[in-house]
Length: 107
Image (cartoon, rainbow, N blue to C red):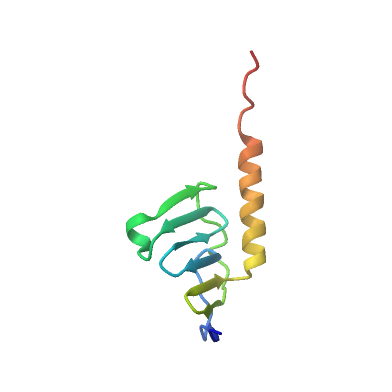
């Protein structure tokens, strides 16, 4: 069974949005931020990355956050800030964007 490794950066990071990232070895992965979702396939993120924008500008850059990484075999989970809060904020921003869209005109 693969060993679980946990790394935590010693200090805090400021000026960066909270994030929750999952990499599945060579298959690809995703990174969720409150205002953006990055998705890629394969081991190289830069060559196949797709972006889904949830808002116009990053939010919460003035707050300090800790970053940590969990690894188990080829699976890697990285978070900057609380991952549950990241998912909740992204969901709230996406829902608000959907609710603010103009309703389709009825025929």
